[in-house]
Amino acid sequence: MPVNLDTDTTPRAWIGCLACYNAGRLVGEWFDAEDADDVTLADVHGGTDRVRTGCEELWVMDHENMPRRGEMSPHEASEWARVALSVPEHERPALCAWVASGDYTAEGDGDLPSVSDFEDRYVGRWPSFREYAENLADDIGLLAGAPEALVSYFNWEAWSRDLAFDYTTEPAPGGDVYVFRVL
Image (cartoon, rainbow, N blue to C red; front, side, top):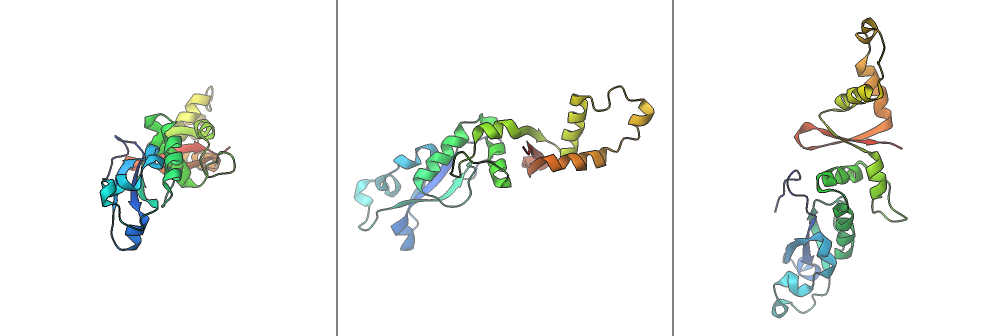
């Protein structure tokens, strides 16, 4: 069930029966990840009469549009989905990229990202970091009032490179980058 992150950002989880998986049978379904902790064995097996003896545990074996990578419990999937759903839909892919960067801050003593820190650090999706840097220079008036002869010699490449030490970037669809401040 591939989903284009630019059009659908709903966190989803493929929840499967762990006993069936360990026995060589792939039994599971896609669910909205926010509700993953409410999914039952009957939901995964397609009805209570189809649940086999020994089936006791559910596991999220795949997911999409969530910041965390790898397998997890349905409860963890619900927690991560709720974090993703707490940011505006158009920012969810950026939240996923921020966590993937490894430069994110967690809320409390767990792994869930701090949404308030994300909001403080995220400065947008840009065609390149250099374009972000040039826009920032205009916004702060970096060269305002400087003689045109001096402006034409300004080394944008070096300035952008030095500025990049204060930011983290992650690839975005279409060759763009997500830009985050390092605080």
